[in-house]
Length: 371
Ligand SMILES: [Ca+2]
Ligand SMILES: [Ca+2]
Ligand SMILES: [Ca+2]
Ligand SMILES: [Ca+2]
Image 1: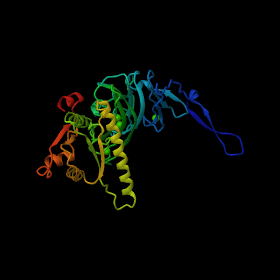
Image 2: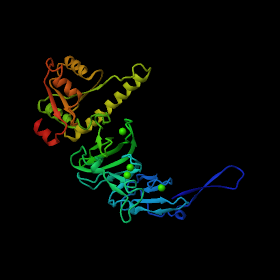
Image 3: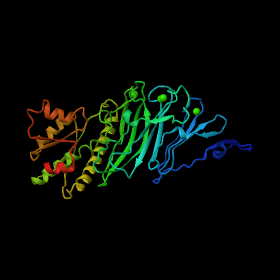
Image 4: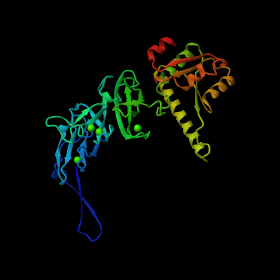
């Protein structure tokens, strides 16, 4: 539906809207998908003529539609300028930006897929060739090409779960978060596996200003609180505790923020930290059940302070703690600051109990064989 603006003849100021979609030439089928998520309708000026054009990404079984604004109140169907997109996909969202700074707007499209395996499909980055073509379209050729793989923004190519059942991008947005002149991309998604486990796969892509992007989600701190990559660590610690007839203590350290000089902000940050800790513990309790440790009742400890010092203080205070189990991050840049500090830094020589480090890449089966 396209809505036109008009005024009534009444003396009171009133505004009325008329549906002029058909008269304006917009008549394609539009469907928001089986799960009724709102799909991405977007206004963008793809051909730089100053008139906003209309893109409708579509639900399962329907083609993506692109309408060119003719500048006279009518639109023409230019959907052939889009590449062929599998109509088995549910397209959930779109956002445009000139990511390569060449003067034409490009498009990122989020995908929901529930019947696919771990190899795909993936989100779509449509590079606009308007400027490359000298400000024109080439007859018989799409104006947009999918470059998501080459640019490194497929998002769903490396989900964190094992036997994947599906994934869904819910939202996405372009912003130049590091203000280097190249617009960056945030994609909000979730994935779920055959065991019914759900993971947040949100990703922040930094634009490298050369047509490609790097995943800076972990480096920027935009993770799910470590709850996902700590899964093998939790499984190992629970397995060890069970085999040795011991118990499991979970420690969440809320680190003091940088805002102590703002009255009240510190208190809010502390409350947020505690509620995040409780959420992670809830998730861990569910994970333990799923892993078969139904009867395990872990002690859940929330402390505030510097992580390494807090861990040491707890170990000194509680003589029953016999082994410290840490998870190593999957991030190729390093195992994480805590592992680096405790296992290789100044604390190593004087550390009072053995430390076990569990790689975040191990599967449940590998963990069961080890623990
Ligand atoms: Ca236009
Ligand atoms: Ca561009
Ligand atoms: Ca271009
Ligand atoms: Ca940037």
